[in-house]
Image 1 (cartoon, helix red, strand yellow):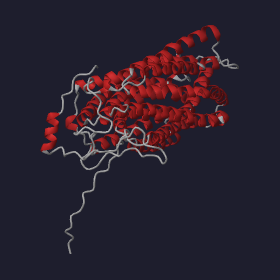
Image 2 (cartoon, rainbow, N blue to C red):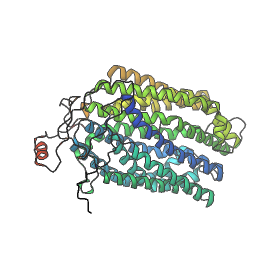
Image 3 (cartoon, one colour):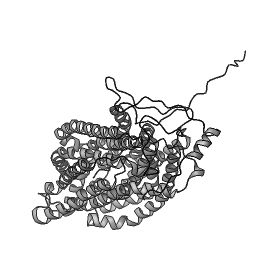
Image 4 (spheres, helix red, strand yellow):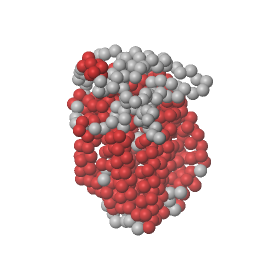
Length: 548
């Protein structure tokens, strides 16, 4: 007998997260935890890159893989800054319940990414020899230059996958979806690890094998993230026929993202010269200049790999607070945005203290994981024990800068970060190396000194100016923010389901929250929706870590 009873339509699964409702701590943890685990996997496959080449390659190849990070981060940092600008605009429009604004921003951002893929690939390949000579100051056989050039030519030739993934993942995170980017990053990590072992440990391809494995893994993550946007049931769904540049949206992306892009790119470029100082360090007991450079850069590589794990909670919470502040200012919840920034700093500080203790205690053993060279292990141990306690300054730098960017105040953090990490640091290095010492610790302490100057300046600016109300990000900067307890009538991320709000932790009141009185909006295909769209006001023109 045939069952003729009607079946309920199963709603499409939603992945976005409304961070304007529910427990502040719950929102931050729910958003940041997938980011943290995803970044952990990303660092894991970076660690495997370094471990494999350190175990199966020459010491110069090991030093090369670690020393070229600042060169890569010049272009990647610039793009990440622009991507953060797109993410802030999307999160603000999402918080303001502006469906059309979100859609236009998504398609403009993805079109911009495709154009930048071509530009950055050409720039990376053409400038590699020049930048390497400036950083290493030597092209001697048996040194770092040859392996570094090989890696960079391959990496830049296939960097489009990384750019596309970063933008697509940024779009998803801007609406509170940090889980799917995490899953795609896990897949890419596993692929990279397997290919590293195959290309380097088995086929003995050296640094070329590491670079090829990285490019292939990034391509997989790009395909998965774009596929998610193409199939998304919400406002961030990517429609190929809608790809194009909206000049007003592009102006807002550059207005918010360009300061961060310049800050990240210029800081990374300045770190190219810092690497030059590191490579020229005078270590006692060495007479061979080439060997001394290999040991210094290899030890710095080891330190940097361990350092990146300590930074993971800080960067994950910084990304979370950018989205949190953007969404809440979009709803006019200024007090809630400020509380979220404070909570993120406290969480980052607490976790960093817990990580510092084992790193300092086990520094020799951790360094020995990456390299068999006794000299590199000894120098890396010294770096870890002397620099690690100063990460507490970075908790302030990263979270407060991220909160200000989420509020649309991206220029002041750029000025502060550039002044501290570029201007002050380069001046410090020149004075110390010229008049004091070219030894290990005097040069390496340029990083903590820059963090301290940045921390002090960032706090002074924040307590003097604050977050503002986010109107700089609005379609109409002169318009009032929407009431905190209501939603714009034309916002419907998906007709089937509601956007999930953050969980309320047991025993904690849902501060700054109002009851959710929203009703399901009309479908986009109904006459009611068409009337709402016609009545909507037209937008007006607005003004155009990697860690440091």
